Amino acid sequence: MTVHDDRAGRDASGGLPDCGVARFLVLLEGPWATLIVRELLPGPRRFGELRNALPGISAHTLTSRLRRFEQHGIVTRTSFAENPPRVEYELTALGQGLRTVLESMSDWALTVPR
Image (cartoon, rainbow, N blue to C red; front, side):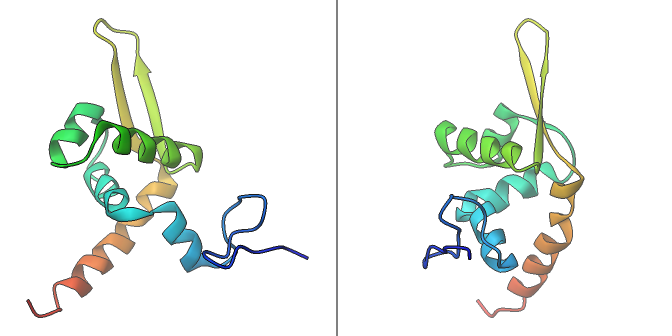
């Protein structure tokens, strides 16, 4: 028997929910998460490029979301041995799978009257 947290359907061990919608919401929690994915859809981006593309996001929030994405296999982080150091973030195949989701969200939202 799996014990669930009533708020998000997470099991007691802190794992991801069984429900696909709840799992999506946990992984892409908050408005910044989907915007970060949107910015990574065209290809690899550096941390500073992401931060500049997302006015208002704090370095802490961006770092936290990128780490979560990396942990769950949505993003890869590549460090280059250069001076100054360079790090790039890129969507994995799993992360690229969010393209159709974000496109559908955008299409739907544009049908809502202003």
